[in-house]
Image (cartoon, rainbow, N blue to C red; front, side, top):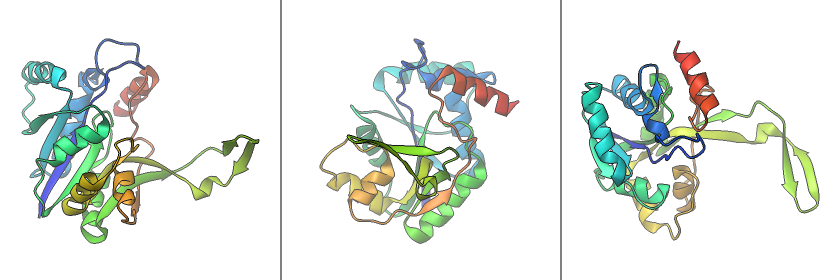
Length: 220
């Protein structure tokens, strides 16, 4: 069975307060996005990698590949208006009888054990969605105020989210709107039960300058 990874990198760096998109920021002497692609290639060397970028960032990426002599083979496809549209563009390059992991381009510290496990469990359960337990107390906000809820009843969702391609492609084709917050939500909307696997607290999504500093310290 063929294995794919769709790396979705559509950031603009707005929350960073920078002109450089966050996936191109330098982390441990090379762009964040290169760390992400390397993690997947090292976990599964024959993995087919599809990188989804905003069309106006593709030239910048090509120049960065030359500058850093980045040699990992991958296909590039232009993104869409929303994350949903971008993932769907990537799925168009995925064959039916395969497994596909969908991952945030700005989660560069994902470990190979989680990547491998996600493929292994998706092959059995049809999907494998990475998640971690909540570490802090949470409260539910409503019109009547707020109340404490059991944090053990909730999980924080990460990527990769890995699927049998026939299931996730069908779910995206049948979806009637595009404002899902993650790919598991698209699949769940089609009636498929979501299978959770344990993630890692170091598998952070870089969205702020503090995240970048934390990732740098973890790599050191």
